Image (cartoon, rainbow, N blue to C red; front, side, top):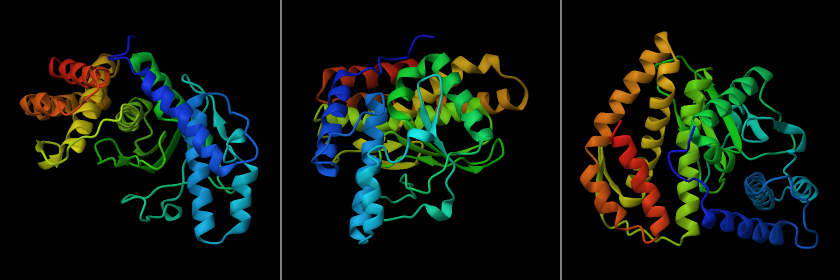
Length: 301
């Protein structure tokens, strides 16, 4: 199925190549690490190595620091799960092993020597989720921006599912799940879209003036333009995905997804005027047109 918008964005590709080179010049100044295989994977892993090395240095953990120096792929070679969008790293870290720190308001996880893959059952669900997302037009998005997937708490359909990203680990996503690949695909799309937009804003040097506030129906409060535009990009993409997959589901799952889509239609409709205004803050034509196209498509569902 055709992508809802061109996720293949040349400025992001240039950003990835540049960032990989800069990080490697810091973490491995005398030897150029051998690429893992694709730029998105190398980009994500480079940030894990940088974050892990910095943490090790700050805590004077020389053994851990040396490990990152000897493993420029953060030990990922034997932790790759084949998926429809390429090899991914599927983890299920214990929340107790996910600290909060000044770099993030939410817990996060960095690849370490003791990191192990998620159990086979979770890796299978994740692989199916990537396949479902890819088959509905989101292959390019997940290929570049959902490289490391940390599956957290297992919940029941209808429970609140927490998911997030952090800017210091682009390409990594953290998600609760209901052990259903169709729902997991939706949430992978949501979080990957945040990573995509963060990269796109950086790559196009768009400096958003956060002095203007916009009402977010999802948060039920006013938010700076940055957060508002993120919501008006991520939620519409999950709406487009849900509308495409809905007729191929049944029972409780179909009712759950239909209710989600109905709810999102109402929330998104209230953003029409403000979104048009917020888009004027985006200086890059290619990025602005993508944000507009996705918002417009979702409004028509």
